[in-house]
Image 1 (tube, rainbow, N blue to C red):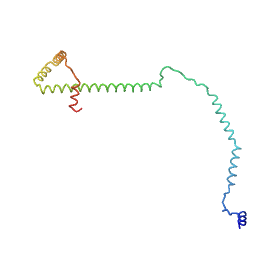
Image 2: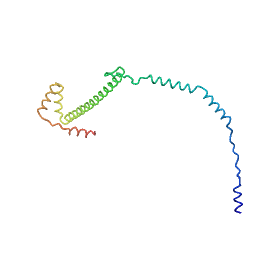
Image 3: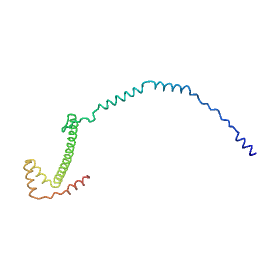
Image 4: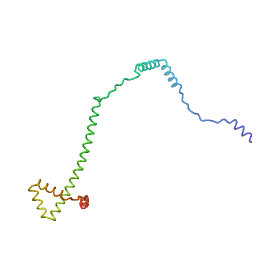
Length: 172
């Protein structure tokens, strides 16, 4: 039984399904015809001629390109220099305005402190405030000069602690 099975297997021819393979003969003949026409034409000679023209142009170019060296500014760079100058000027102006603002804020704070001090003198010592007002309104320059002389005669310690107390009181 084993022998017959082996013989059957050896002689058995399987049946494969039929596969449809399209016929490309016509397309291949058409492509062959196009290739033969291209080879018969003068495209290769045209390409060779173009390459030779390019080579001749490349050979005609100078090996070293002359460059002018100037040690001054040309007209084309003036716009850049003007723009740079304007930007630099704007930055400097902004810096001075910012510092001026800081100085004005400091002067305003000092005047506010002086005004507050005068207000306190007026509130606690009305007679002294009347004397100051009379003197100031009658001769502002002379009265102020005399006040400066008196202040210089008496050395008064001016401390930043007073300004800090005022800031703390005002909630700043």
